[in-house]
Length: 113
Image 1: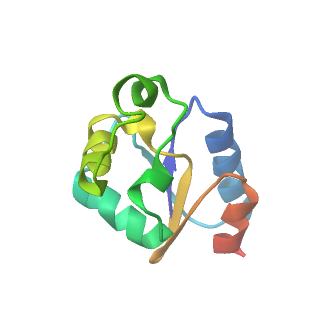
Image 2: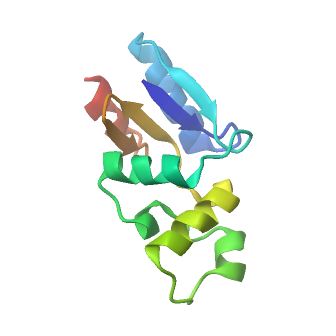
């Protein structure tokens, strides 16, 4: 299992706690320090069964100032997330070939249950 984690995010810390409490082994990936490539984002989208826009944090200032109200292709949205990792929803937990967004944190229980 893996968690794409942002230490400054309370939802992400809550997700991390759920994984720690589960007793299962997992890897923590600080995606702000180690940004995801466009290919990795595409793989995540497949595992989540999401379109690129569904993975974007639309309340982030970067989004509002640079991308909001623009007609962007999926490829352009993925490129924006690769360039600005803060735009990626969090936390993301992966187990095998399935992933969930830990909002609400109960979603994580689907993977570890």
